[in-house]
Structures are given as structure tokens and as C-alpha cells.
Image (tube, rainbow, N blue to C red; front, side, top):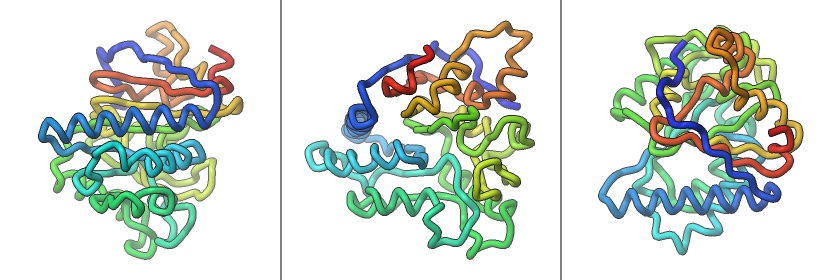
Length: 252
């Protein structure tokens, strides 16, 4: 299990509600992308799925015209993907396309192949890993992640074998406690390549998972805590920010 080492202490930013949270995250991402492009770099960004991610994506569309960001020169990835048919609404990439990718002209978009394209989640994971290597992805400029009520991150679930995946950037996931059961996820090894990790979390139903993810534990208890709450195992090389709404922050 690859876990973060010597990472800066996480920052916690609390917003009044989900709408304010989405606006803040979208605005900060656009600022980061504009600065990176002004400096002549091609930013790599990791996207996530879920309700609050959808809200962020829609805010990106609203704010994009004034940002100066060239979305055609941003490389986009997904922290996990559902191994289902290509046209399934369960696919994170389809949610993102409907919300903002097509609207802003993003076309350098990578995710794990669907069940229409390859036969197994293992083949999908291997293909996604090949793409990561071919693109020379050394690190994400910004990696946005959600958080499950059980503390899962990407599709790394408490107690699942994927927590121990090593030597590859991706892993096939089966028997997910949250449907659909078959998925492809980035591993801890890949997630921890990010310069900036942003957890974007909304709702009182996530409050206990937020508390557990940020709780201080004795070094001897850290591995058990991580296996129970996998989000503890991801941190940015230069920063980790928890963007929360007030409901998600109630137990801090």
C-alpha cells in the first residue's frame, strides 16, 4: 500500500452550502489553470463524479468565458470509472461530458475503456494504465476527489483488495459495495502523484467520513485507520485541501 509521506498538513475550507462550495472550487480551478497556461505549461487535472462534482462542472461552464482558460490545452483524467457500457449514465465521463466537457471544448479526455470496448475490468485497467504511461503522466496539477460515506476515495473501498495494489497506476475493482459492482480505479500510487489534492465534499451524510479522514491517530493505528477510511491514504505533494460545505463539516 503506497501512502503519502511528508505531505503538508491538510487545509480545510468551509462554505455555507453546496452552491457556494461549487462556485468556490470552480473559480479556484480556473485560476490555477489560467496561471499554468500563462506560464507555458499544459495542466493535467483529475476529475471525479457525483452530485457535488456535477455542480462544480456546471459552475465551470458558467465561469469559463471570463477565465481565459483554453480547455483544448488541458489534459483531463478520471480517478475512477465504472465498467459498464459506453452510453451508461453511470459512467463518470458521460456525466462530465453532459455537464461541461463538450460545452467548454475539452477534448484531451482520458478514462478507462467501457465494457463495450474490452471484455473485463482487468483489461480496462491495463488499457488505462497504458494511456497514463503513453501520455507520460508524472503528476496531476490538480486532482479532485469525492468522499463516500464509508470513507472510500476513487473506487478504493474499505477492506477491499485494491488498497494493496502496487506497481501499477490502475486496478480493477469487483464487488463494489456501491453499484455498479465492477470498476477501474487509480491506485494510491497514482493518486499520490498529484501536486494538489482537492477533496470536494458536501452533505451531512459525509460528515462522519470527513471526521474519520482527518482524525489524528497514533502511528501504530494508522494502517488500520486507513483501511477503514481509505481517503486517509491520499495527499498532495504540495497541498491537500478539503473543500467542505457547512453540513459536511459539522463533526470537525
